[in-house]
Length: 270
Image (cartoon, one colour):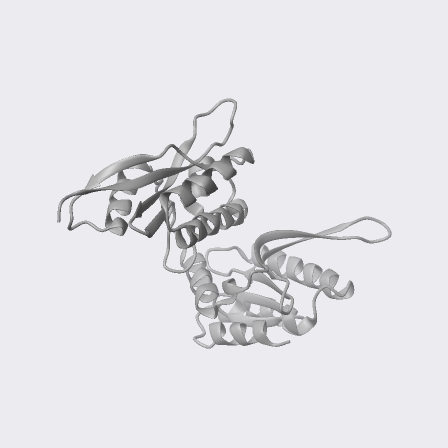
């Protein structure tokens, strides 16, 4: 087979439309009805939005916005079967004024041995500068592993690093949750870390957990059985902090092999 031209579009983000040029964060490639989209932070299950947040100076809590846009571009790649269809959608996106967009079309000659997926990844590595991330602690890695294996991120109503505002007569109360699932059942997840923390910090974590879940249950936002605390393994002396909160929450140890299954079952229980 002779070389053929593959249609490509950069995917970019403009942090400040008035001061900065668009920066490439992905690539779309199309060839004979097959489309491939490669994005910064691509993973087997869900995009790792930390790369985008680190690249543009956003806190990790803002990563959900990027993840939604990755789904949009991936969805475009799955549904659009022609270059005209892809270009039309990217044109519509440009008219909305969104900071995420598709750049100008360009064609790339590829050998008969190189498929559209491998070409897309090769061009992505040339066109997109992916930042290096600080290494995650064991606690953070175990937490992400539990969330992934529990499959609760498949819930479209799952939110990360949210702040809930609870209205009251005197003044509003604000509660932060690393994970909050709205449906099919509401679940709130807080974290309690022992590794590398002082005893005073652990005590403060326990106080925050008690305060937060007391407020959420008092206002009917959560049931006690769906107030979850994921924690690492404490020393024997520090188990007392878990004893303080054990009657008010569901404790799940990160290194317990049953934790992902229990969390998954909890999310399914109506």
